[in-house]
Image (cartoon, rainbow, N blue to C red):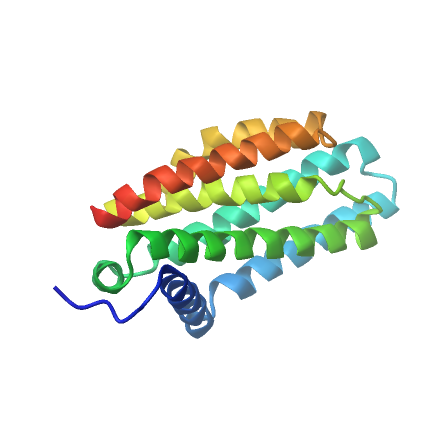
Length: 208
């Protein structure tokens, strides 16, 4: 058994978080493709909106469907492209507590960054500004997609499986975002449930 080189869980979390982003930077595939998709959809919807071919009532649904698609494009690909040997090595040097912090940080960084990009783009090109509570919804969706992707990566299953696992759990936050976008309590509750699920499942998956 390899000796863990870290003295505390925070150091392990930071190491895993940095390792995942370093790997993503070296691959240089996921982020450019995701940004290209965002630019194309943003410009297309903006053009349709300017020509009165897109009703304003459809913009919230377009915002969330586009955001969810980019989550499914970015997070599962990041996890599924990591080799089984790399995962085994990470489990030797990072404890389950450190894995929770590192993986959650990585997932929420993706979720928050993509939400911020879509938020700015929709405000500028679509004349649609999502409510502030939508950031909580974005975090919940990111966690659900991330946990599904991590479970799929540990089981060495396909990209499609990651989407199938996460899709049913995204329905409730999507419905909240579309029909009760200002419902702060409900959004906080679902985010808490997503975090509790992560806190329960990740240690089991990491130690398996």
